[in-house]
Image (cartoon, rainbow, N blue to C red):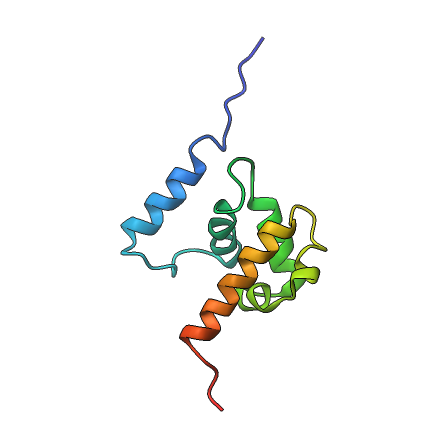
Length: 102
């Protein structure tokens, strides 16, 4: 019987280390990876990669995900009320810190 190595073991740690080693810049991350890192805060365990891909595919970009209504977010498999609320808060924080020019 062969032992299957869990390819995702340590993935979250590696992603956090990558962020820190890049001087806290997200430029080397793809859109789904940025959303995935955000999702780490909503899901203690499990693979958030698939949900991140689905969010980007549905809403088109990180900005689209953060601007989406909580109900729309919960329409994506793997996104419950806690995750939708967290992403909405992130979007509101972005708008608060960087208000759109009138």
